[in-house]
Image 1 (cartoon, helix red, strand yellow):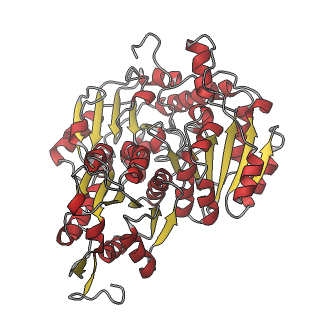
Image 2 (tube, rainbow, N blue to C red):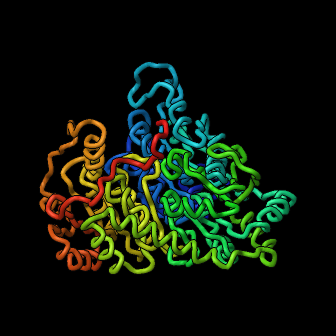
Image 3 (spheres, one colour):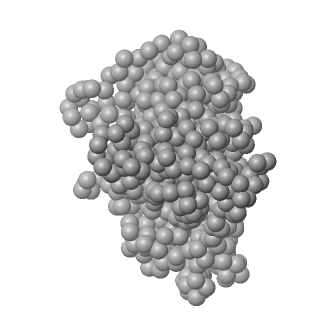
Length: 556
């Protein structure tokens, strides 16, 4: 307990918030200071135990905290003001909710005397708590100093309990300022993993033991189970990972199908499989051809959320529980019982190779860019991607990911979150290079955070794929709207002038002959570096990307 934190003495609620975050192991908080959160941030500043990163907007701060939590595999924290400021964070909270990020969102609130009275009091929002409930796993309001610590403890436990997610806590400004006694116990509540039922595991293992060509589909809820996934791969399971779970099994493992789960050659492999186990995945529509992907039967599912059973696909057996615990138990039970077809490993390898070759053939000149990036990256890196054509084509599937690396992707599909996520990721993993893939359209959304990256000395390289507009929308307009390009062409600034004004290292690439030197210099630079890749000079993809793939004839 820091000096001055004496049980029985008087302090303020703001100091208790800061002290509790310290006890939770929080060392970095993101956000924007405001008159309705100053007691908390003043306490953080005075106590000097937590770094505060002042983002230029609440959305950016929330994205940073989200990515920070993902690379640290722990709790992220963002502080916003109330009303408009809390609303500014809504899109980033939806992203954290989609990704299942354990995030604590502390937002101010107006004084209790004026709360919920619709007086247009400054920073008031009608039913802000309702908004927060819609974009959070749970949302709480602190009504008094006496209820502060218990609410915070429950909020943190909720955020960290599987299925994890963002949790919001409103703290009115007069509660933040209120005097209170130092609590006797600042320790956070224990978080326990849901233990799968032994009989259910026995039954599932007996079913899987009959398989000769087994597959495992691993999602974000199984990212922490990389050791257990590797054990099953060693027993003969072919392993597909979602884009959120990339690296859960090293993608250079001979039984890895990477995140090519929806590729035609891998779907053909499904037709020869006699069992698939889905662990910690929602089988999202954009990775299953809008739920039309033909998965193997029997189909089994493990999830910490019991209500996930059969939500996307009907399953033959469901086990509720933590993925790591369940997969470890299955590996123990199957170690001497699984008899895999000798041809299976070769078939898995061939399907993966065909999927990769097929993707490379769609990239045109950018296949060379992928090879150049892959050649220069170390085995351990952080790979952050925004919603952009380049990510949807190659960024989500190529470059080899391992458990030593971290992949971060704007899972909810919101454009413009990649750059602030890259800042949070870089600050969360100092010493490991962060590389971000963004488009020019997405970069415009969060330009102010360029200054945050410089101020915080974020060690990152940002690849800006500049096609001077919304490329994927242009492609959809070509395919479905007669080539009428309405509202997609954007004014393009001089990114060199912009980067240098903000204090970024900068290189422009108009030919892929120039990229290796530019990338090497940017990787060696200290602080944030930007490489603008001029797609209009390099040329188009061999095959236009027009949105997530769907089954021909499938209903939207």
